[in-house]
Image 1 (cartoon, rainbow, N blue to C red):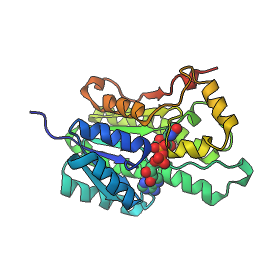
Image 2 (image 1 turned 45 degrees about the vertical axis):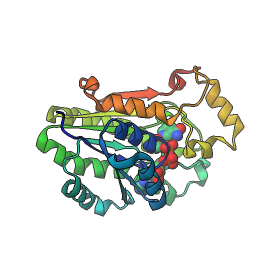
Image 3 (image 1 turned 30 degrees about the vertical axis):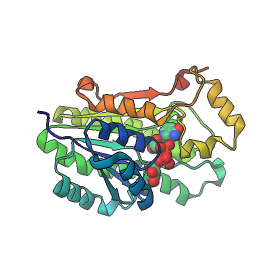
Image 4 (image 1 turned 90 degrees about the vertical axis):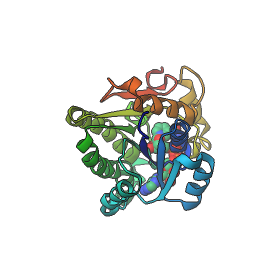
Amino acid sequence: MKKQQLAIVTGGASGIGLAIAESFTKNKIRTIIIGRDKKKLQSAKKKLGNYCEPISFDLTNLKEVPNLIKYIIKNFGYIDILVNNAGINQKKEFTEVTDEEFSNIIQTNLQSVFSISREVVKKMILKKNGVIINISSMASQYGIPKVIAYTASKSAIEGMTRAMAVELSPKGIRINCIAPGFIETEMSAKALNNDPERKNKVLGRTPLGYLGEPKDIATTALFLVSDAAKYITGAVLPVDGGNSIGF
Ligand code: NAI
């Protein structure tokens, strides 16, 4: 019998992260979801059932990340899978973005991904086994106005995916990145619902002609962590209805 796998999904209580956690738990992968909002974590736990373990933690609390991973190892055992999904966005004119706002987005979307990956990789290396998925965005495939910090963070995620893959694949750890197109979640609703022009532009360059569902990213994540993807590492995979190559 195959050993019970353990996954961490950051930002797993809502949107894309919740869909990924759902696809994992349905496939009997024990899944720790990390988020800040205890209520959202509890309702996700209710929805996902026994294979889901919620942990309330703010990922920008970098100093505590090593303790978080120690706690997880002690209480749940070996970490097979890490999905770096948590992220925040801010839509604001370039000249209006403060240094603090820029740093805050970099801290959440980039620095915390590095810190948690480093701590998890230290453990994965010991068993020469592990899979990491990072999540980037269309903002790193082409220029999108008014999302300067988000674009900087997500472009760095793709570079970091490749750097991690060359260094860590020889140590038995596969690292890939999913670049979602425009997926219906709270985050995209904030960016698109009061801006019909932007929404039309998005749909106009999406060959499939509609927004994606969180489930579309979740099925891709499930594939990437499975043995069916055992020869895939360092890839950035757009799951975008063709948006990244749209005219
Ligand atoms: P969401 O806002 O529904 O979910 C993000 C989750 O991350 C939330 O549960 C939030 O609580 C958590 N989070 C944020 N900061 C955190 C922190 N400091 N500590 C712990 N948890 C934190 O957004 P959505 O749409 O599900 O996004 C998930 C990922 O997909 C993000 O990285 C986003 O940038 C990316 N993405 C989303 C797209 C979309 O169209 N929805 C498109 C491209 C990328």
